[in-house]
Length: 223
Image (cartoon, rainbow, N blue to C red; front, side, top):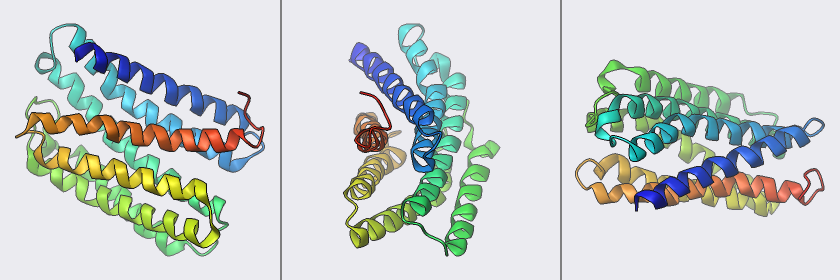
């Protein structure tokens, strides 16, 4: 199981960075392609702060002995995941030519700020192996609301415009949160629940791949 996890993490990070760099490179004259690339790179960049220390811990002295590095990595990941959704809202605006989204931007900005502020509070005790579950819930409240907002916006326009690409992205976000929320609530008590992070990670990888695959069809990206 340990080696499966190692291979999975390496595959995930390599795939996300590869697709993201390709999209950023190909998106010089295409705003939405570049935004997809930046979004994917932000995802991989943040996750690497947690997954690389996790890989090191699994290969050496174990997770508990590397709790501080893993905790700081989780903090970085929590911030970059929030930025991921902020970028996705911008992609939504560009994709569907949304002009009157000031109120949505303000509301999303408040949620992003609340999530980041709650994440950096010392009460999270990121460097402890068994961090407080209560603060894990607090900092994820604005994050879940942000996720619900993005799902609503994406699926509403996808259905309205018969956009199959963004319909899939909306479904991917739903899957990710369906797997993530039980981990936040129960992983400390029931360690086996943590296995849901695998389909959660695959959902994010799928979202990046959807952009990469569909954009490649426009011949902006090489095979």
